[in-house]
Every structure is written in structure tokens, then in C-alpha cells.
Image 1 (cartoon, helix red, strand yellow):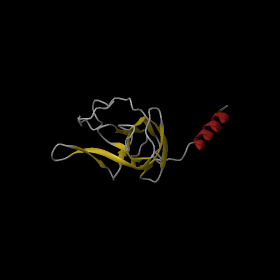
Image 2 (cartoon, rainbow, N blue to C red):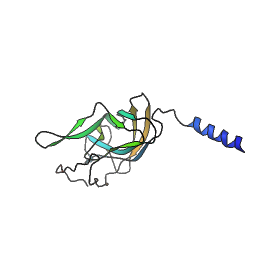
Image 3 (cartoon, rainbow, N blue to C red):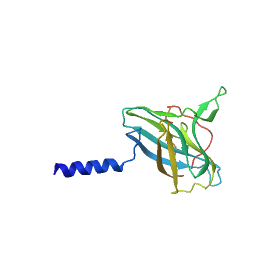
Length: 163
């Protein structure tokens, strides 16, 4: 009996892809565009690291857009919130998480190759600093209301209504 369980456990471990950010899970992903005619969109999710080493997300790619960038919001000297690319990537701490949320860090899809319609699925490849990639499927949810507080703890009103 023990031999059978051990064999099954070994077979299961070989079926999993080798991934240096061992223990990294993606929770509650969703994507959206502000209108059907938008040329850009965004994706949000929780990157949860159950491993003992930090991971750094450095890039993302998708056939849904000409470019996918890691973005954040930053307040300029006039108090205006602006989106900007995060070229150094997002760190997911060991035994911690990094949240991509509206009003905070997010994946930005630029030059959409398709419209984002409710219920669509967007295939995205996340690339990590160690050279590993993770393929995920992100559902489009145009109906989700924004969270009350962005992940970095600041509340910003951009004057846009999100329906």
C-alpha cells in the first residue's frame, strides 16, 4: 500500500511544471477595459507566494494586446494620479503576497488586438526574474465594482465612473 501511494505521489510531482517560484499561486484574476472601443485594458489579481524565497514578476505577454506592461499609479507634484510602467517588476515576498488592484499596481494591455467582452478569457504569460514563465487564463469581468481601497492603501478618485 505504501509503495502505491509513494508511486502516485512521485507521478504527481513529475506532472507539475518545474517552477523556481515554487508555491506561487494566482488568486482572483480578472481583466477589464473601460469601453468596448478601448485600445487598452488592465488585469488585476493576487500573487500569493507560499514559498520560502521571494519571486519577482518582471514582464507579461498576451496575444490579446500588442504590449503588456507592469504598471502602477503615482501621484505627481500637483496631486494628479498618473499611470507609469514599473520596469523593475513586482516583488512577491516569501510567504507573502503582492496585490494587483485598481488604483494600484496592475497589468496594462496596450494596443488591444481584440475587444474585452464580459465573460471572455485572456491568456497571459507571466515572466519572472529567474527566467521562468507561468501561463494563466484571466476572465474578463466588466461588471466588477472597484475595491474601496487600492492595494497600497491610498484612495484615489480619478473622476471616472466604473460601470
